[in-house]
Length: 528
Image (cartoon, rainbow, N blue to C red):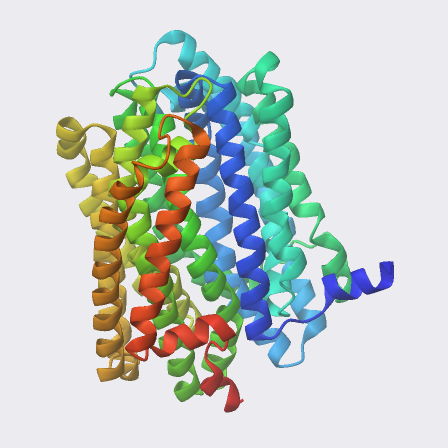
């Protein structure tokens, strides 16, 4: 039995199997993420959650700039290239060098930032009072440990991605969320956000640990190596620089949003982050799963110059993502109040917080389709070893978002930050697609146009049904009770999705067949 379980965890996944595994595990991870946020909002006052989320800004900035960008944009394509050529031993040497360099650099940086944190926190949350500022510094110092563990974890995960071993990789965020849930349920009441911060660190360590056995099964063993002169290391650093700039710009956007939110009503930072976490669920489950599963294949196709299959994989994934996220957009916009009430509306999360979060979630939800397409388009560039183009586009869209964030936040409050984020997301996705079209013209054709128009029409009909049928159900459910809200929302969503599926079926949308049978990119696979 144990051997069967090990074989299941360590086995290679096909593209279809990988997408299925990632959809299921990412859905589970996001459900746990919602439970995490539920218990955090229930057991910790939103004013204290402001401190908690503000404390993440510096550690997240460090990790995303120095590590995450390097792995997603540079490490996986280079590592995959080594493996494709049969240089497995050299590939593991490359990984060990980057793990050693990354972890050592982050340890040194964490020590420096520990002493600079009081000054940096004043930049992050300039409108905090002295007590909240002190607590932000304390939590930020604790959370400086997380980038160290995450750096090792994501390099190991990058190796698993390259070998198409997605099961252990996809379970890592589940373990991480479980750790925070334990803290929120059992320790937050007595020890507050400090306990949660320590369990975030424990979760980051477990995120790393759960992936190591599968990597070792592949033949990887860690050895301390600091080979800066290695050609692969140099190539990764060269490719990661543009991506690091893009990730830095994105995190600066969040830093600016946090600073602006600190001047708004108490709880605004918490509301922004909680609403943001909720609206990312459909994009992570339906979009990130596909783009993550397809990335090694795109990198392989690009490395052997198979542009026909590259285009086919990309366009089919794009169409499925749009098909899945269009109804999600309708549900999240029209049922935003019910979603917030069900997930957050209890305990210390009061009615004022609920209304503010629902409005913020609504403006966030306008950009679900754009957010789902951005990682897919970006990975298409990374697979071609081009990290500069998506970085330039990302930075430009972020500048627009920052420019409009201040006036919108002054007139709309924290919801204005969500609207500026959505505008920037659409600019980013559109620019990436236009630039990709110049490189791969086959990603734009009449099939895609008609497919998108059918999906848009079906979404509008679904929206009308959800709106009017949802109001009709108010007469049959007690909307003052949890199960009343749950029943009304569930029935409305089921009816709305049935309408959407029936219309797209009658229109002959191929995406429905691909989504149900999980036959994504089957034409491209047949050419392998």
